[in-house]
Image 1: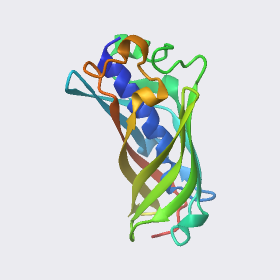
Image 2: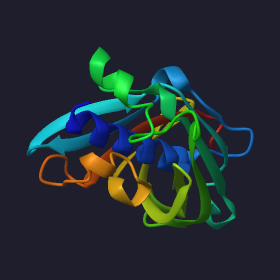
Image 3: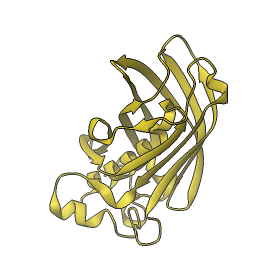
Image 4: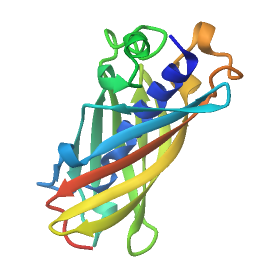
Length: 191
């Protein structure tokens, strides 16, 4: 498996875990209009991937963000870099170990308003049995009756043992993975 594929998969996983920032009670994620991507660097070259399957349980009130709760799950076996050979490596123990850890999760602990449309969501991201505190910046925008939450944040793949052992050389595959998300939500109160 190529180093970039593994790094990207790690980033995507983290991204999926952090995307639940903008959903409210009785709120629904609109999967067909949502995406979680990850970007890693293999020998300095950006490699992009995405997760195809994820879900969120969200209770989000823009007027009282501190009362909000966001839980996110990402199916680690849904990671793809768009190359069959590389995608076949991602579920293996060195990367996501899908057989033992089929999902990555995020559970919020605090939601804070930064300004009229920007929020910070703090919580625990868990991948491959390892949990780490993260803060995810989220920007909300109204799109008709739907709310779109976008953002990006970095994770360290080696913290979560993604691409470990022979792939732990960060000169081949960078440790930092950028997670990017666009989540479309139905049922969020207007900003």
